[in-house]
Amino acid sequence: MAPPALAQQPQRIVLAIGLPGSGKSTWFRSQGISPLATDHLRLLLADDEDEQGFQNQVFRTLRSLIETRLEIQRPITHVDATNLVIESRAPFFEIAKRTNSLMEAVYFDVPLDICLERNRARQRQVPEHIIQEMSAALQPPSFEEGFHRIVTINANGQTLSDRT
Image 1 (cartoon, rainbow, N blue to C red):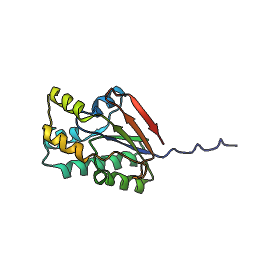
Image 2: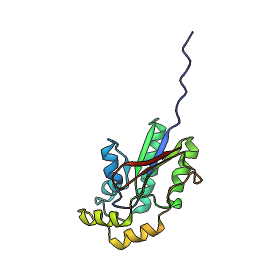
Image 3: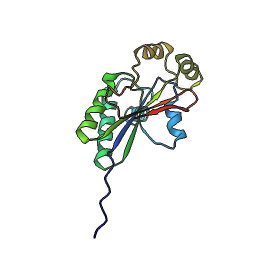
Image 4: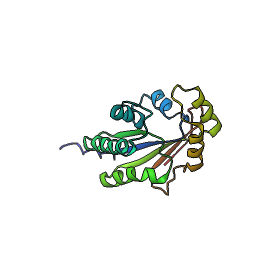
């Protein structure tokens, strides 16, 4: 008699959500994770990580890469971008729905003043007024939005909560 088939776990799309300087990329490195990152796509597509003129192409490429990873059965696809508002996250939910994948969030709950301080220490700085505008627009992830799991990370890179 053949052993029972193992139930295949649903694939997962994990979105980082947080302001510039909140520690998203640093956290991914500390976890040994190589995410799909919009900064890297800007470099690949436009030869400049700071180039903001091709956002549609960058995010179209990001969505295509996510779909390709799901197609080749990668169990988890991490996305390193700010993903600050519900509207910007909606296309990822559409992909998840179409592919029967779960959506998870890693939310970087870091105070604005710390993000601004870290930004000042960076080689590649985002203008402070832009970070302030982003902070005012930030919509934390919620289960009502459709996330299956939400992990909240603090300014020290420590997990504050992990809820499903």
